[in-house]
Image (cartoon, rainbow over all chains, first blue to last red):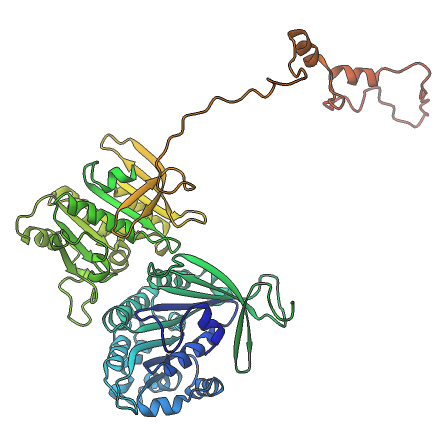
Amino acid sequence: MFPELNSILSSSPDSFRTGDFIVLSDRQADASFLIHHYLSFYLRAGCKVCFLGLVQSFSHYSAVSQRLGVSLTQAREKGQLVFLEGLKDSIGVISQEESSQSKLPLSYLRSPGAGLECLFKFVESSVRQNGENEDGEKWGPPVLLIDDLSVLLSLGVSAGAILDFTLYCQATICSELQGNIVILVRREEEDVDDEGSNLLQKGVIHQCSLALHVEGLPTGYCRDIHGQMEVWWRSREFAMYNQRKMFHYKVHDKGASFFARGTSSAVL
Amino acid sequence: MLLNIVHGTESGGFIVIEDTVKYSGREILKCFINAALKRGEDVHVMGFETSEAELRAGLDSSCVQKIHFHKGHPDPLGWTCKSSFTVQQFTTRDITRLVQNTPYNKASVLIVDSLSFVLRHHQPVVICQRLQELKKVGVVKTIVGLLHSDLHLQGVVESVCHLANAVISVAPANNEHCGVAKTTRRTKSGKLMQEEEYFDMSEDAALSVQTRPHQPGHVQTEPDKPKADPTSNLTFNLRLSKKEKEAKEKVALPFVFSQEKKSALLRPTPGSGRITYEPDANDDFDEEDPDDDLDV
């Protein structure tokens, strides 16, 4: 996790808001470093994490988390982390070699028009599973992480069905169980005019309480600043309600640093 | 106008609150609920997008018992069999039955949160028909719906707003905590009235309208102060007499190309050079002035 981002958002693994729906979005940049931040953040905080990793393998997230000081393998063995490995499991679903129950969450691959009800049921059962950590205490509030939601659009699921899925997740995880949700929604250059992509992004932002948007610098490539990130506090409970602030960031080997615009160490 | 509509001074009908990601209209929806409860009317809420707890927060606790929540949320599609009302039941017959089933029902207000969710699951044409039927049947006096205008095609938004008696579009006011509401109201005679107002919401869902955003909390109309005459009380004279004004108006400005200047330039002055041209046998000499058609 990134300490500077924690101070910008006024949160830490010891004290963080619950019931939050956080949307990470990007445009012509890669916001997945924020997913790694939240993954290590919530694991450190002792929460029960359900991670839908639809675009990368488990070993990829594991390797990055190792650099951030968290072991995903251990967390999965302890039962703190439930990981849905989309890439690996999807081959089985598409070729229909195995018809076991565990493949049901990815049933949208065979029938995208049917919606994401099965995926939601998988998420619900994962977060409702009671478990205990080594000290015999229950895990903290449940957290759902999705990387990334827009890949479902490419697989043929309609934007409306995805928004229904996120609404159900929010109702169960945020409202009922007082947990958090972090979703990554990406947009490629070609998607700028794509209605489904627009609708999905606007729809999740309507539902969210905090939106982090990552973009490249408008002035072009810079070696010392990898891009800009806009933080939009959308919930009425924030003192900074409906305000947006822009920061610059730089991603390095073991984390990312955030600074106010114009205060990069290369410039000062 | 916004306050009149919220407080129900203008009689009922179908009211649409249009919002975007930039500013949420849900707070104005709560103001409608609050105002209806204070008038003693029955309020039926179809909540699909937000929980009952969230909508109840901030409402007047003494009247909160009179709200009938038809729980779409947390299960608006029936996936977990937890809800009493799914989006598929958004039909004229089902809504009429729900409203008529409440004891001592009077002057009901129907709140839909949100119309965007309903439109996602039904054909827009069908929903427009049902809304129109509900208006005609008369079992509900007022219908107030929240519509996220950036989640639909423009045609769909306009079709729904066309049915409405009043449309309130909310947007953020520049650099202020308050918002700006553009209200469009259609009277029974067909006259269209529009107004733009700045508004603010208090914690107990009370709406306050401001005319100027720089003076929060005041609704003022300042009388026009008489403008001070800058030429009075000076030690030198800045005024012009009548003759001086006339002479001033007659002065030819230096760079304006008037008729007199043009003829003065074209008139040959004595002593200037002259050009004489003797056409050759092969030349095609045309007596006409080639610049004749120029509008100089």
